[in-house]
Image 1: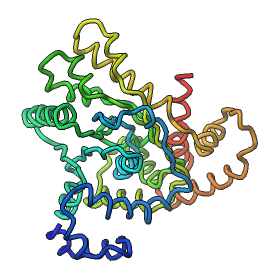
Image 2: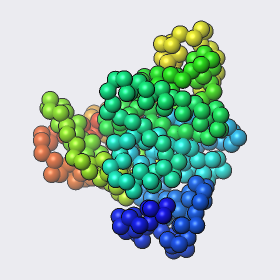
Image 3: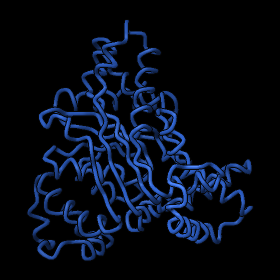
Length: 353
């Protein structure tokens, strides 16, 4: 903390974000994560992030046990907010906040490394060679299991390494395989000890939708998309400060009965069953918004809402045109990619009745 408050970038941020009753001297008195989240992170969220939503709600946490530690696996739409929103609702509902897995590709500056570690984040290493990746994956797997099963601290991790830029939330099998690498007493028992809870996070508007559209469009032209050095940091900032409409978090059911139903301990079978259940819960528990229904209707499909979203449709189309303005490329294809991003959650939810 003492190092952070000497950084000029951090000082600028603190002067802008700190609640009126907190100053630098007060920050230096903070010596526990709980105090940091109580005196700094929660007020910053309520003062600066909550107002970027028209409404932000959560459901499903009622069935969770506050004395247990869980592995929360959620869809991944926003670099920062997915875990931040989840932890905010855990915190205000009386649960201990979860430790957060964050990729080292986001840690471009020293102050970011310090800040995320203070706020219960641990680092996931990326872009390693095969031997290094295997060793890092085993270490990560052991750390997550130890944190949940021994230390009784919850953990959040995204269902895939990168954000679902096309709106299609599917769990990466490699992630589940990594989680099982530290198994020492049978794979089913190991996964049951993790108390896996799928979490659905739904945003009415994605502040980074234009950036994601541009990236997908470039790749659709057979060109490898090359990020600028500061692009991830810029996306983090945009995701935090720009309007998002309504948002919702749903905590799913812990996956334990499903694991009990697996006969034997075949690795492929166990991993497939977990992937299938995580995807099922995340997709089924989406909260759909007018933006999803409107995108579906623009593609020519009917919804039960009919013409009740005419005003919303005008707002949505106007916003789309504004967001895509300035992106070089075929306008109709850019619009198709943009709309598909919003339609996909509706398609996924419909698959599960």
